[in-house]
Length: 464
Image 1 (cartoon, helix red, strand yellow):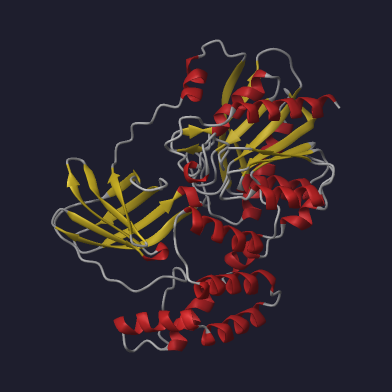
Image 2 (cartoon, rainbow, N blue to C red):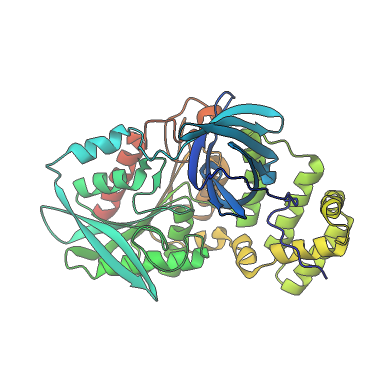
């Protein structure tokens, strides 16, 4: 059988061409001219006879996605088949200026390698304060052969502090959870330490000063990193080991829930910020429709059905052999897969339908993918006994507030649950759905009310 590499359900075979102009590097840009703004990051590695392109869509929590490129003179063309989009631009000084075409809609896009950070007023206030009532210490701790580096902030006055471990969301995020210059975890650490908490925040494995592993490693491994952080803090003489908890954002919320269920004697409380409360496969089914609408990506009913079926089969079939056979039989009769086969065969007539189907089966039954899709936070939620705060923005298009907070309230009836109007996935204030994914364009990093509510709730838990 001819071996194929299938990188997504919508991938097609394309070929690259190289010209003399060099586009090496990481390029950042935000689409403009449409009803929404989409931040994009392109990673281009170019040699004399090859070009490799991957791209990130931080809004969609998608990283290292495949793309293909053609360079003719000073013109760069990038095909992003996974979202039926393309970019074509030409060099304009140090930037690349052109058009981003998504589903026939045209947006202007300027790509730059300029690392100048945008102004973030909340971070600027913290940096300008030379009389902070706490001090910071760079620390390291280990989880097996992984060394994690972070910052521990401790109040200047007093001792034996309650402690909070901050856990970032998915992707390559550092200890501050730096997203487009927004440092949400810096703000949380500052507020909590001003109110008497020791706070540890750390770079994700493989990011910043943390070594070993990858930030995309299985959630169970990342949950182990979080518990290593908890145990490091509990051993500090300044900390009250009976009052330590985890605050996690997005994927970090899943980790907080997972660890609270598994280690009830070590965690006194947890805070979930935009954490998932649904089975992961079901969460992905619901969110793909939301994100497609938000990004104005049009999928046919047949394409939506295909993705839903794959997620359901992988998420619910317990026997891997049966799962693979189920997928194989389904792909053999699906009309969308038939179109994929035709696209591949147009490039290489020796490719058979079974080649494509088998490659798709292999792609969607890897141990890592199956484990992710079969992760079920509801089972962990049912076991949580410690105090829990769960918050979401009502305009969060990545982790839907109603569905996920509803599940948390249902399975953890003692949890404090709150949804905030006009806040997005990062808990930024925005005017409506169209502006909710413009993380970079919003100057606010996190709504002050959310920070205050978290501090107040944690203070009340510690007093109890």
